[in-house]
Length: 329
Image (cartoon, rainbow, N blue to C red):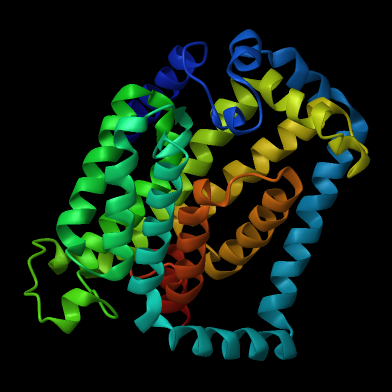
């Protein structure tokens, strides 16, 4: 069953690779995207064949392994990480509010820019007012559950408009998590004593899992779509922003390595493996890329929100982190 679903997922990515537009639309105009969409495996293959690139990959893997061993074996690092973990867990009470702020800002940002959920769908003036209204309601903690349900409906409508909105699964994950948590503190619903009406609150133990699948799934989709099946689009970003000056490797290696990193981080988050460390790394990388490329913050705010919450919650009950923790106890 898993193999079948995986194959179906990849089939859809390949099928739509020449028919939809990716997150590079944030940085490239539509005509450029249309002209450069499509597969180019030769670009990636040339990067793989280069012995220097292979050495860089092996060296990176070696450094990561050494870092993991150091964090698990060196007492000073272990004690510091445990201290951070305990302190982070005291922030659990703030996580519903953090998610509300993330979803609210994302909706307001999309509405004011006349986007539908994402800059990948621009020119939707008819949805501007409702997205802005929903964003303010969610941030104020007023009618949160109905407003969030409408946000979910808007996401699926956007997905119907453009298959690539799968790259914004983090938006949907935040909304679903809010429906499950049904916690409006601080907010008007709590102040006026609005009764709990969400039928999903019995699934609270699954919130970290929902968030992990949302952001991890989005990252894996983007890695496959942008870097593997539309590498020329990513190539334009590398050349346009002169990224080879940042790290002097070939364009193909830039595209391939960023795809691999994005895929590995996404898979790590889905599995709940080294969740806190992975979330922290992803948060830092996302922040650096955000400032470097000068992208609109509203299109990334749900990513920041999920990563911040996962740093607090870790992988949750259904994660490899929790499994290994039980094995050690």
